[in-house]
Each structure stands twice: as structure tokens, then as C-alpha cells.
Image (cartoon, rainbow, N blue to C red; front, top):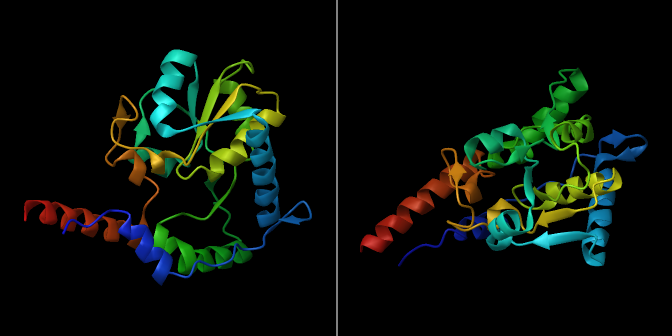
Length: 219
């Protein structure tokens, strides 16, 4: 019997207890509260039609026929694995390089709870995100299709961009993880676009499932 790749997500959901977010303070609010506020604002923008949700299967048409420019907001290590050719890149999160004792402790906790399984590095919000975006997309009337791996970071980015004056924003609903082979005309990198967010131990589960699926198809 062929093993479906989504069994990886089922396995992880059943057997891995994901931690509550670390409550790091940002201007008097926890980092979790900051993220939640940005996500709530973005959902309201999407529900009101101010930000247009675009499914991965419709993204190529949105870019070729409706003038959208793809803005990839994933961190560079995810983009290096797989990326849409010709897309712009401004990361919303960057690796936290602070090595103070408190941050090192947070990094250790992050690795034990999340990093080991997912391969995700300890990150912090890119303080220059808007400035960097304005440098590569100076025209705020540009149609931007904002994308990430799962759709959450791009939702936050879309909210920040809208508030800064970009009013023609599309959001890649579900992120690249929802993309199928062929949704984008040209993909560069060593991995499939939909697997670029997978790392750590879960990456080896994925490779095992791909191998078992290939064996199942032969039998």
C-alpha cells in the first residue's frame, strides 16, 4: 500500500507535544501577543477583502495575468532549499545572533522543544523588514503576492505592509506547503517547494516516507 506523505503530519501531530511559545517581551507585550495581534489584523484585512487570498494553484495566473509580484518572506535558510524563480526576497524573521546568557538559555529551550524536531532556528523579527521591502519595491501601488511556508508569517507580513501603505496585497493562502508540483513555472533549489520548511528530525521522517512510498508504488 502506498504511504501518503501527509502521514508525516499525522504522526507528528499524534506523537510530538509542541510547546507553548516563549513569552518574550516586546515593548511591554509578549512576543506571542505581538504575533497574535498581527495575525488578527491580517485576518480582518483578508475577511474585508483589503488583502486578497490567492491559492497556490492560482498564483502563477495572478502573476502572469494580473501583475502580482511574488514576495517571499521566509528566512534565507528555507529559501535556499527551494524558491520560485524570479521572486523577491525580504525575510520577516532573521536568525537571532544575540549570545547573551539569557538568549542562550532561550535558544537551548527552543532547540529542545522545537529546533530538534523541525530544524527551525531561533529567530527574531527583522527590524528592517519594511525598509528592506521599500528598497526592492519602492512603488507602493505594486501588486504584491506575499508568501511563506505555511501562510502565517506571510499573514503577519501582509498586515505590516498594508499598514505601511502597500494597498494592493495578495496573500498566498496556506503558503508554499500547499503548493503542488507544477503550480509555479520554475522552482530553484535542492528540495521541492512544499518541503522547504521541513527540517530536523522531521526531515528524516519525510525522506523515509518518500522512500516507502516509492517502494509501495513498485510493488
